[in-house]
Length: 619
Image (cartoon, rainbow, N blue to C red):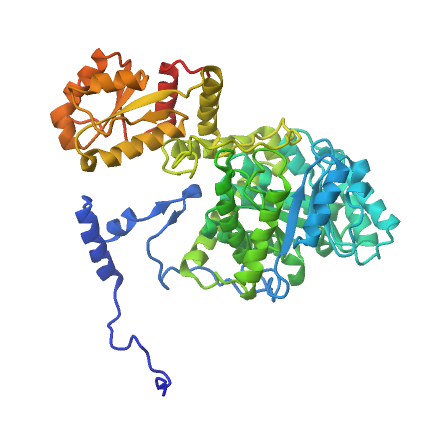
């Protein structure tokens, strides 16, 4: 027989409440064992993780970490979602991206997607994708009253938009049944290319309102700022400034504020930091609700329509299979964050045009999270988390400050043309690049745990993306350049550049640092030669000569270094080693023949570049 506890009975009733001070004292003890002395709040600060925009993740959040009332789902300030039901009824819109310039091949891929879980289409049209004149062929067999179509056409927006509107008429799509977006985003195109397209956004918006009320005319695309290396707050601030600029344009043309708001959809990046993604989407809705409130929009019109796209910046060209894991986490963050539509980029999108398998995995990522993990069945599952609510608030405040600076500079267009946006994004990316170079921000399969013998994934080349505006960056770019040098060397000589690992002492003494050194070298495309397993001053020279390398790296514990490093380094120099590294930090009395010390937190890309240069590997 099951005995239920009495009403009001608490399982924790016999345990005293713990205080923050007690927790801090426990932290002090752990830090002391790790060699760090810190007390009170300093001990707590030692466990904090710094984020961009001056934010940080604290190790502990409690009810004392106050944040503004997020409201209820579907009501201002819309932090908890733009609709009361969230995505619980039918899940989020699974939106697949298609950029193949061949209309018939695009049509085959589109139909396969729609038959297997995709619910809307995102088409790249124009010089970087499908020709606008071929839009009808690409959408042959597509039921336009059931499958929303979103265009991304840049300078060809006017032609692409008119082609889609004509297609609705030719197919006899009922006036109120068409769904999607014409994708007009002149400021986004300006950011991408350095020039703004000739498109009458007000005329397109009026056409949608009059003839296709379910179609939006404009997109506020924050991806150009994300892909240029911007932080989450910078992405949000630029999106907010862009949205305000479009509201001004539309209302100046005679549209009411509610109608103007209804013409906008916002596109945000979803990264592998799931909590930051959740907070970004929640903060974006809060910020837009505040702007539209000030503009006089009705409460129902203040909700931001959101399209989340898994981050192109995080996608790698080496070991691209790991991208499946990154996009899964990003999709989860986007769904929990309340995105209305989610695009999972195929794992091979950084290499070229995705194949059928990659598109299948991309769409099935959403399907699994929706159908098997039931992620959409709970409205705002992150709501009420002290951490998420606090992060949302802090991120919103940082984004608002950047938005205000853009407005003081004359608005988004002026900030783009003056170079303000580019300058700030470049500074942010420089800071992040330093973390990537030192591997404080690891990239699995690239800077950490690289697979040097992996077979390259070959894909059909994608159309060249637009250029002339903000740059496009990737987390893997510095390491990709090093790996490309190694690949060229392999093709020219039949072998990769090599470094001999001179492991000293027992496996217990050298395994950790030998593993570290091998991992580091392979991140730069350098083959570590660890044969034999251990050497000493008598055997190091012969082993080094057999390896065929001209650079060596000593690997062992500090205690063994004190006993053997000097003699082994001298033997290696005598055997022809042109450069000797040591895995570990420089001590008070470093061996005379060691040229460089490599350790965790050091600039890995600088070390790898210098080794490749020494080995004569062409840039």
